[in-house]
Each structure stands twice: as structure tokens, then as C-alpha cells.
Amino acid sequence: MSSSQNKKDGVSLRTLNILLIIGAVSLSGLMFFSTFHLSSSFRQLTETSERQIELRKSALDLMDASDYLTEKVQRFAVHGDMKYLEAYFNEAFETQRREEAIAKMSENKGCEDALNKLQSAMDSSLELMNREYYAMRLVIEAKGYTQYPELLKSVTLSEEDRALDADGKMRRAAEMVFDNEYYDQKDRIRNNMHSSLKELENMVYTEDALALESLRTELVLVRVVIALQVIGMVFLVCMTSRLGIRPILKAVDRIKENSRIPVIGANEFRYLARVYNKMYDVYKSSLENLNYKASHDELTGAYNRLGYDLLISSIDLRTTYMILIDVDNFKSINDTYGHETGDRILIKLAQTLKKHFRSDDHICRIGGDEFVVFMVHTDELQNDLIAAKIEEINHELEMTDDGLPATSISVGIVHGSDAPEAEKLFKKTDAALYRSKRKGKHTYTFQS
Image (cartoon, rainbow, N blue to C red; front, side, top):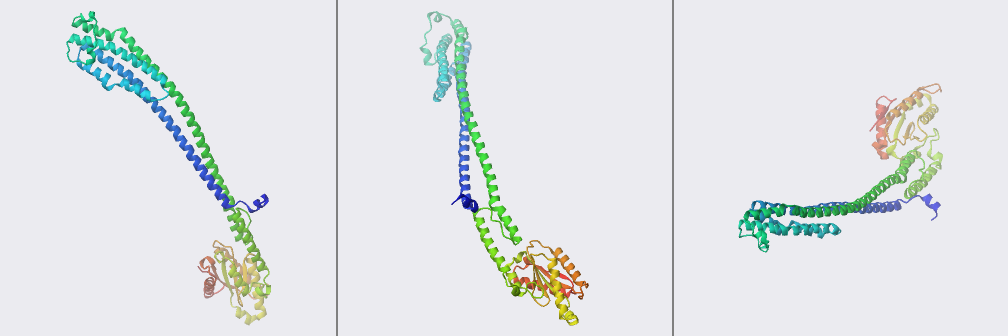
């Protein structure tokens, strides 16, 4: 099919619908993909932070455990109370926070440098324990304890220290855990621990930077997807308006105007428009080609009974007023002034009706002095307008400057929305006319 033919036929709603479904599914998939990766990046960032906290806690636990051991051995060296010895060995061989810290860091990949520093701190702490064991053995000897950990039984005092009395051994034990050499070893533990923390911070900083960069990238992707969805929604609204809503609204306006509808919009709507226009052309041609004499009253030029039957079967009664008109005292006029004057009054009435109603409205003479006006395309009730027209028509019929006697009409009016079936509509309108006659003629009645 050529491009010119495509342009003529317009966009197919079926094709557009398929494309919109594909677009919606694609955007939804992209949104799911981007949000999934965004959540993964956020989870990675969270895990990195949690890992940093855990590793930092492990490093600090080693230092805390070392300080705890120092505190207990110093208290034991000063007071000689066995509870401090028991607390020391419970931490060293039961709780084992230092060993647990090393194990936790060993489980995490990428922190080998930090682990090495922490292991150095651990080695220094273990080395310091030998000094602490010696101090504790001095206290045991000074106090004469016989029940103490098996490990301390293997500690051998020097001949010089063994020769000291109880007070001397206590002083010697205190010196070993309070002198500069002891605290120098503690500083080495602390320095190694701080080095381990620094290595951890460097490692985590790098991981955080990578995670944040990934998160930023995912956020950009989500923004792009959201922008595409907004553009898609705007496109959908515009296409729906252009291909569907606007053509339908224009078509409705043209139908109300009793004219052809524009061939615009989607392919399917253009097809309907072309079919409608063909039917409309046939309808208009049929109306125009009707035998004028067969469908029109020869005296007044209005539609006759045949024209009335054709009209009432083809117009939209739901948007039409049926106005039934009868000349008041017409028989008396014929009897008094003769049939020629009566005919002239009917002609005058037909002309006056054509003058006051629109060209789209249809005027029919369905009986001797009985007329019907179809006021078409009136979705909204226009009772005041019709009433004004009838009063003006009666005013003109009362004028006698044309040599005709004054006349008037009685009118019954019903809107087709109250009786959309032709037979029912005529009966209701005839009843309204009858009410006007009973009210004294020269008036009108709206019936619902």
C-alpha cells in the first residue's frame, strides 16, 4: 500500500492499540527492571554499611577484650583476689572475643590488609599474655594458692623472683603489669588495631563509592523511565483525542446540522464516515428527487400527507418538536367569505410558518386546515422560543392590510423525547391541540 493511501486511510485503531499495548508492556518491564536494580543497589549500599559496622565492631572487640584482660590481671596483681583471675581466664578461654573478632574478619573477602593488622594486634596481645601469666604466678606464690588454672603451673619463676618474700612477689607482679614495657606492648596492640580500622575505612569508602555510583545510575534510569511513561500518557491522550474523540464530536455536530460528516480520525472511523456520507448523499438525493407534486401540497407548497409520512419515518424524533396547528373557525370563514378566501388564508399561514421557522424545519399540510411543523435538531427544550414564534404568527394572521379577514391558530406542541414513537407522538400532540381548542382557541399548549 502506498504512503498516499496510508495517509488517506489514516491510522488504524487496531494497529494503534497493539502498539500502545506493546509500549505499555515494554515501559512496565523497563520500570520493573530499573526499580529492581535500584533496590539491588540500595541493598548493596545497606549491606556495605552493615558490613562496615560489623567489621569495625570486631576490631574494637579485640581491643576491648585486651583491655579487659589488662584490667583483671592488674586487679589481681594489686588485690590478689582469685575472682579477678577467674574472670581473666573466662574471657581468655571461654568468651574469646579476640578470637571471634579474627574469625569474623576472616569470613569477609577484600579485607585482607585489615585482617593482617588485626592479626598483628592479636599476636601482640598473646605475647603480652605471657607477661601477665608470669605476674599471676607471682601473686599465686605470694598468696599461697593451691587451686589455680593448670596453665599457670607451667610458668617457672626466675631464681631471683622465687627468692622474694610474699610482699616482694606482690610488688614484682604489680611492676610487671604497670611498668612502661607493659604499656609499650599495649600501645603496639592499640596501634595495630587502629591501623586495622583505617584499612577497613579505606576499603568501605571504596565500596560505598561504587555502590553510590551504581545507585545514582539506577536513579537516572528510573527518572528516564518515568519521563517516558509521562510522554507515553500524553501521547495516548493526544492520539485518543485526535483519532477518536474529536472526530466523533465533529460528526455529532454535523449530523445535528443535517450535513455530511468529515472523513478524519482513525482508519475505522474514516470508514464509518465514508459509509455514512454515502447514505446521506443517497438520502438527500432521494428527498431532492421526490416527485414534487407527489410530496407537496399544490396550494401551499408545504409537504402533503405523503411528504409527512416520509419525514416522520426518517427524522430523529427524539430531537424534534412536533407542532400541530389548526386554523380557528376555518369552516365559518369558508362559509362567510368563500373557499377562495379560505385558500388564500391557508397560503398566508404556510408562508408565515416558513418565515418564522428555520429552513431545516419541515412544514406539512396534513388536512384541510391542519398543519404540522417538525422543528428538528432541538436536543434542549425551547418552549419559550416556540411560544414567541406562535404569538408572532398569530399577530401577523390578525393583520388585515392584505384584504383577508383576521384569523388565528390553535397549537399543540410535544417534544419527541417525551414520545419517540411516531404514532404516540402524534396522539399526544393532537391531545395538546384539543386542549388549546377547549381553552378558547388562539392559543398553544405544551404537553409532556
